Image: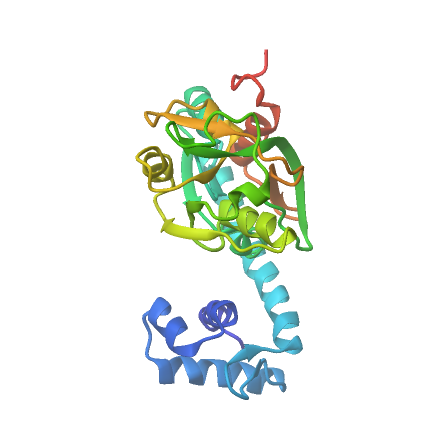
Length: 297
């Protein structure tokens, strides 16, 4: 009989497709993890991974992974439903996002209205969001780029322009717009690969047959504006961040390309049991007035 512990270990190996990294994350010995995967394959009567060269999840493994995610997600949902019922409270809510700068307004309003609710915030790249929603590790996620996966529901929160921030003394700082050709040789300060801002930058340049000249990749996204303001380079900045309070003096110039936009979307698992708290959070976020940055009137 398959053990829950073995199934959870399988999901980590399936996600990383690397035994030693999975063993490190799980804090188990690699030979023990290898035996766990081998026992699962023996019970199922089929290999779950291709082992020619690098370890790869095969079609059977992907099919099994999807079922395991749903099964473990249902168990977690059951545990949380019992806790909510016995506590006679609203429950907790777990929210994931690539950036929480966008969400500070609705989060603050939610906490003021429901101070007793336990709120967990998780940073998550978009490629992990679908898996975490299906397995019910998280209740809701907010993404700045589309999450293409089955079993999810979502609602678009807002769409906005993404411009380029320049130091105030930059030769292009006084322009009303800039073209991709004019940005071709500019040094860019941006986020690391995988972040929506970096993906947009790469897409915009690739569409024009160009490659961005990147001089700084930063995990500290709040520092990007400061690095630009002191003259290290230029960088993409969404209109929302431009409206937010910032100490960095910058010139924000629109890009003469209709693709220089982002759509912010709230997602949840279609078949998940959301706690009362999670449903209240979903309502708070979807009803928020994103134009004024205030609660609905």
